[in-house]
Structures are given as C-alpha cells and as structure tokens.
Length: 236
Image 1: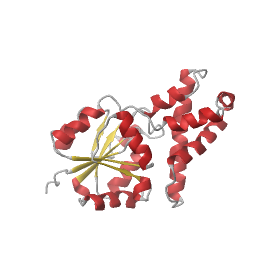
Image 2: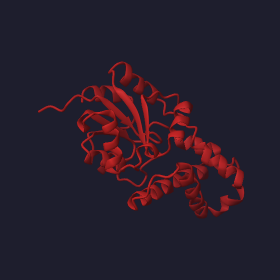
Image 3: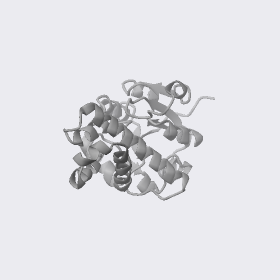
C-alpha cells in the first residue's frame, strides 16, 4: 500500500533553516579571535541543547528561551575563563539578543517558496523556543510560513510526543500526511515515533555529537542542503 500524499511540512527553525552561528559569532567581542569565537558559539549551542534535554527529562514546562540561553552562557563562560573579562553585563544581554536575528541558509527561501507555490503545501515552523523569538526570526530571515508552533505555544518541548501530537491535532492532519524537516536527530527520532515522515538536513553547525554515518540510515531522507527538498517531498 502506498503512503498517503504529504499535505504539510514542519520545519525545525534554528540550525535547520537559519544560520544561528554567524549571528552569534558576529555578536561576540571583536577582540576574541574568530576561530575561538566560533568554538565558543558551538559550545554555547551545545550547552543549550543539554539544558533543554535536562528540562525535558525532568518533565519541566518550557521556559523562555532567553532565560535558558542566559544560563547556559554562564556555563559556557566558565569553560572559557579567559573570555570573561571581555564579556561584561551589557554584551551578555546583546549576545542573548543576537539569537533573535538570524539569516536563512542560502537555499532555504527558494525551497520553502517552491513548497508553497509549486506543490501547494502548508509549511510551518515547529521548534523549541518562544513565539516572540520565532516572530523575530521570520522577520530577520525573510522566510514565510503559514504558522509558527513554538514549544511555548504547544506547552511541550520536543521530542515529547505531545509536541508533535498537539501540532497534528491543530492542523487536523494524520501523522503520515506530515513530514518534519530538521537538522537534529533527536527531533526527528521523536517525530518518527509519532508516525511522521522524516527528512534530515545536515548542517555543520549542529548535531556535532552525532555519528553522521548512523544518522544517514535512520530517517526517510538524508540531505546536505534543501536544494532538492521540494522535488523529494513532491515524490513522497
């Protein structure tokens, strides 16, 4: 029996659609060498995911992402004590705010436009974070979605099953009619357990602790970018 036709596409946002790394590195003091700034940004992002996972495992309600980022910034700074004198109270605020303005990866806008216009599909953000963050990021990236589903709005962190089930309930769609596109294996694993179709997009900035050879065989499709995304979804 053939799979039902895809009717909607859920997108993870930061990392998957957006180049968070450039924004954060640019916001760090220019006195920090760029290679060190890059490593700092990657570790901050890693600590953010670890903290989110801890909260998820404890069954805690989603908190404002700015609070999570501010707390994990302190954890990251403790690992880079030589950077602490360069980052005082004002830049810390600026650093957290930098996450609210991110450019899209070069091919993403065209892919989303094709999904909407050529395939007539509904496209949604489905990501951990706040609605305010997602509104700011759609403005800075210029990306156009039908709706923004944040963990704050849904009431659950991904990869909680309820995070996916609540979105499906609101969309009035079956799991097999929806595909999740993400650069995070943990997210796609959660969606997979709920019956969604899954497409992994590899981004060098994310999943730095994952075994990519293993990830390549886990999901319906593995991509290095979104250039071929509309065609692949059109054939699903």
